[in-house]
Length: 193
Image (cartoon, rainbow, N blue to C red; front, side):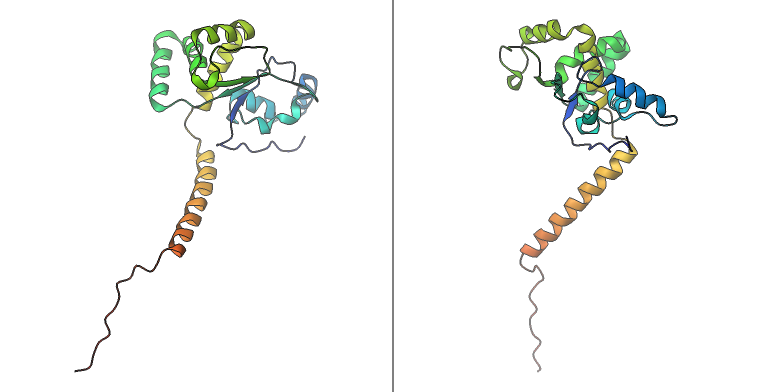
């Protein structure tokens, strides 16, 4: 099994439900029993610790499996504040129930014909079709994933992203400086009098 693959903070947020038959649950359970101190990469993925970076768990999908993949987006700060207020007023399940519709941007692997498609936003009819197809518990799971993926960056993520971002910025600054003409003021030669 080896060490879990490190997730990329800028990877697409792709949820495959824990209930999906595409997972090799037999293998996952067998490997999980062998791990004493560390969580299985599948568990990290399902809890949102990998920000639902599918590349960290793809090897635990059954060969030739065609899972339902829910592509999500991170909430804005304003949306996160609204969800937090909903959570305080109505509880966590109330927040999950409303946020799945907000964070879902694409669906693949389901037998659905959507009215407008996800690029133009889900219509109420589309939302009802999706919920009828996957069931309310999976909608809650999607809502939970949207909230987990939208959580502030951890220190370890900030360091990785910051070093990547800083390296790119330094490279761009160097390239920009090299392509610019010198900006020093021209000097006037001194004349002897």
